[in-house]
Image 1 (cartoon, each protein chain N blue to C red):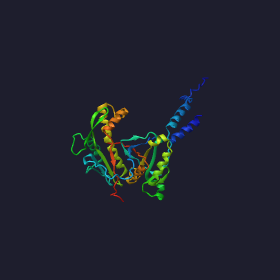
Image 2 (cartoon, rainbow over the protein chains, first blue to last red):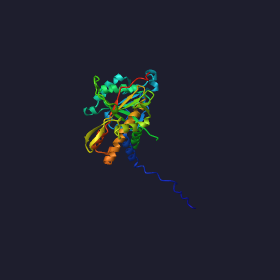
Image 3 (spheres, one colour):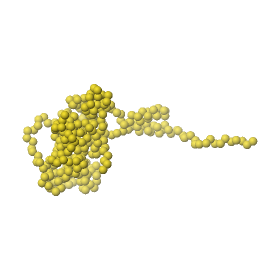
Image 4 (cartoon, chains in turn cyan, brown):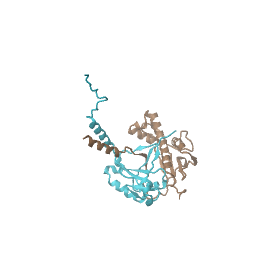
Length: 157
Length: 178
């Protein structure tokens, strides 16, 4: 009788997975290094303004953020729908800015204190009045390096 | 082992935000205790007034203007290529690499309304900054044959002296106010 030889099992052989952990580790390290955790939850809606002449904020430890925008939906019952300032995690008024700046300056190392940069992240539709008030109190707080946060504008010209 | 690494990998994948923050850098004037009584008057021809109203319209040197035209107007004002009577005077000054050069005395004065939209204000700032950046870039190309960003610190400083960033901001008006 003819012997039925079993056909070689069709298809490919299994891929050697011995190097898989190495690849996973490599990816892991890449993401670990490039990660910056989100520091604050935004309570205000900020649609970033756009511009072209941008400067990168490279040293994160020098930067203090001030957020300006209309309160998010869930806070509107409490805080209304006019643009508000957010410092750290809470809604604030212009008068709080000076102490906020002083506080974040204290948290910096002495060498960095003079290089402090304040970045205003404001909604693009918010009126300039509130921003001017912020600028005035920043002047009083002697935080003069200012950065208007903006996203890259793609020109269609 | 691989499982743990996978778990960590997925955690970092989810929490990663990779956007770097960008923006337009400015320097605020230091606080003044009292307004000085008599500041020296600045000649009309040396000031480039830019006004923005609450409807986000521009008034440049007394004439309405579109934002897209602002850069060119600002460049002409800063350089004053034809020594026009109405455009700013020039100082002669010794600058490293360039020798004795003429530097315009022009100051850009910016004033906005409290109801001006932030985006418009930023766009105006942006266009003025662009005028200065383009002038610096051109000068750098013609003098050193390199882009401004690639120059040495000293060379950048010399070019910054030629085209300083002089933008003065007045207190905003509240005409269109609520």
